[in-house]
Amino acid sequence: WQSVGKGVNGLVRAITVVENDIYVGGAFTQSGDVSTKYISKWNGTEWSSLGNGLTGLVNTILEKDGHIWVGGSFSNVDENEFADNLVRWDQEKWNSVENGLNDEVTALTFADDYLLIGGRFYTLLGQAPFGYVEHSSFTYYNLKGYYWKSFLPSLNGPVNKVMETPQGLMVAGAFTNAGDNPDADRIALWNGMAVAKPPTTNSDNARRALSIAAAELLL
Image 1 (cartoon, one colour):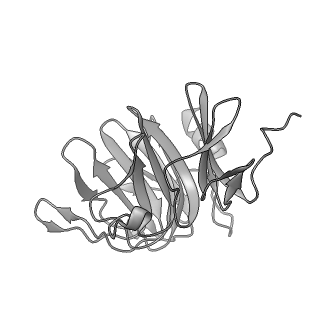
Image 2 (cartoon, rainbow, N blue to C red; image 1 turned 120 degrees about the vertical axis):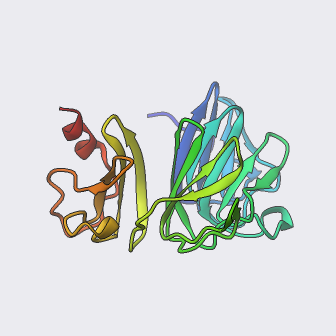
């Protein structure tokens, strides 16, 4: 094992690699000797901050087209009243995603031109083309049209993980009866038309990883 600089001074919840840089997020406020609030970047030699950092816990980090998307439990990033729980770093500053989300974001993934978002939120603060979108725990954001879309029927509990598979979109968390399907407890597959229960998901504990279930679907 080797150290990464002098490490960070708190919990790490998310890591993503972009070319030669590693972005790290969590519950820390310092990386090495650098003041970094909840998120930082390691370039192989030294740590650096991303602007003024964030105001709370980071759960997930993704990169697409040079933009760093971050989900967690934070608000008013850079004193932006709409930068709540989901933000985008454009290499120079933090940007809100529409009007943000009203509770914690725990999972992000991309599918084509959509950002898929899971968490503990129960309604969206942003506005859709035909009015406000109200949704529970899981939604997606159109990266080209810049508007929210919802999955209906919705989930009745938090989402911890989202993964795209050839069979459809898989989500895991603390929900039961996803989309009114009595067998879709804590882990479920969305095929674009209906919610289905993936195989072997009888645990009483919320799934925090989908690797095994996704592999079973691919067999």
